Length: 378
Ligand code: 3PG
Image (cartoon, rainbow, N blue to C red; front, side, top):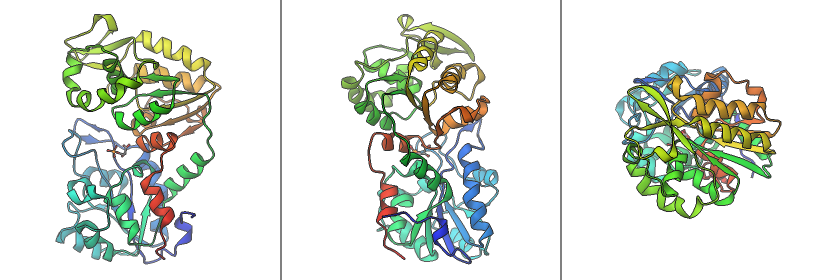
């Protein structure tokens, strides 16, 4: 069934519950304005213009992570009202007092355990759903998650997708990746593993590349300590998959804030890894030159610090120069393209999604998309 878009609803004076993806980099405690936030303005402006009453659900990071924070700063960045509450009295009063054309952001939805059951049978849906007429998901990038703000509300409210999600779905439907070179990086290994299972021609970088290197038997020293939990969770899954894939041959470590490049044979090192090294960059650039089509997701290193942007920059510049059709995704990766001033027009398609894109490319069905497709609520 076709997913409804904003054009299919009369939005005037309607109460709209809107799922956005505001998940962003937090640098020295400061939430950064992201490409996703900029893109969501299209949907927000339309809702404001059409006099809807809009309340946003969004997340920042995951419980237990360093960057798991309140969304107060995010509200300022996207220029909407904020209430530091989700289903309490404060939130309900703030929602009820909104006027047509106004927009309110609730606090980090992942503060609530109910967010993680993914159903419509919990307090989160029971409290908020009766306050709304329509649910809109504008976050394709979170649609691989079976979480209540993605899969619970559309089961009980008339639902559709926002303009960002609509553009993403349309573009991806027209993309056909064949004989593709996959460049998989970033710090979220789970979804990359799904891509690995179906692809042979793979270059790895970022934390993912380090985990693949460890899965091949290397001891990276301090980085093994830093990645302890991820090693436990992912290395056993990676072991049978890494034999034929390319892993970094050198890394840049951080010695008291200064970059030093070390070949793999000099590991274990007492210093943590912040980027891929120059030899790896050279090797990957050569492979990119030969590729017929390219899929890249996830950065190669710690792009918040200029010294460690080198690997990501080398890869992105090589993709931009290549004549191959390219798809690039991941929140940090798309932010890096802007930050590094690489011409966006040089890429075939830039997706705002990371893990969701991985799963889509791996042929999986995204629960957040399926629930909108199946909805019969009018
Ligand atoms: C992302 O940044 O890819 C999305 O916001 C999803 O975040 P998650 O992997 O923590 O669900």
